Image 1 (cartoon, one colour):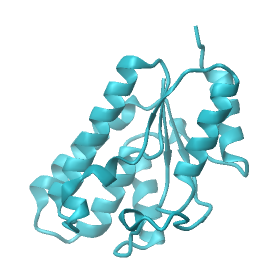
Image 2 (cartoon, helix red, strand yellow; image 1 turned 45 degrees about the vertical axis):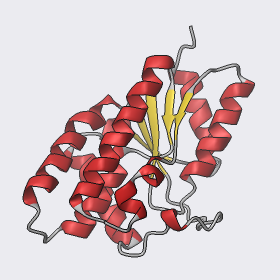
Image 3 (cartoon, helix red, strand yellow; image 1 turned 90 degrees about the vertical axis):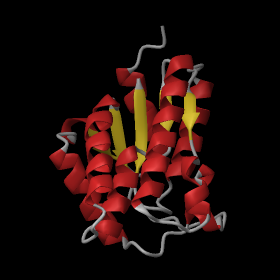
Length: 183
């Protein structure tokens, strides 16, 4: 089983993921966690927000999830590839880099169907660790949310998508308890 927590920067994805893995360990559920992938992109760290950077991060993210799934029956990602595509669509909507955008969109359309569930968070917590790699100042939250919801609809992921309720980690823990067999 593979689930992802999705949303704009600063909306608590990593915090929820951390609480979720703690809850699962307390229930003796083993899981792999994919987190912080974008921080490994040399293009992003050099502030090269090109379509190539988005392709690099998406490929790194898919690789990390596949490695986790190879070792674990349950994988939790603190971001979905839909997030990277939403950022790309916001940044390059009127761009001439059509080939890269088509590739990004097609990879995400096919791969996103491998998620068993995508949990959307939209409560704004801010960038509490002040990590500059997490600050997104060239995309508005409204544009990101519009792009993300459009992707979910266009890719036919509505039945796999859940809005996180107030207790994010508890909400997802309950969903996993109802939908996952640890045996």
